[in-house]
Length: 152
Image (tube, rainbow, N blue to C red; front, side):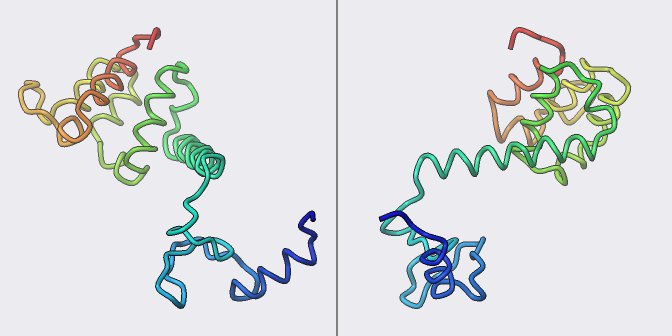
């Protein structure tokens, strides 16, 4: 049997208020964590295909956030663009927007300074930044990408 629109609409109407999917996880009437059109996360975790689609959507959202938040983003090399997208994917554009020294250095094209601002909280470069402490090796890779190590 192939799921028809009639079948899908019927089940969606039974599972969801107004037939609209629940986009946030919620406990159903039995307390089972559920999402979407009544998808039982306890007994049927999402598939790798669904996880990949969510990941692709999240990466696209990060790219769009970079384009809209940072006027200089599209002028960066592809490697630097990937680095900034990684930052936004990891922390969100709101948190990255608080990295004012980093963003100013990026805007000015001072990529060595920007990389240092990601890794350290002080200009003497002695105190690791909370970002660098949190993500450790990832921060070093991103800083090298910002510096212009195009082979990464």
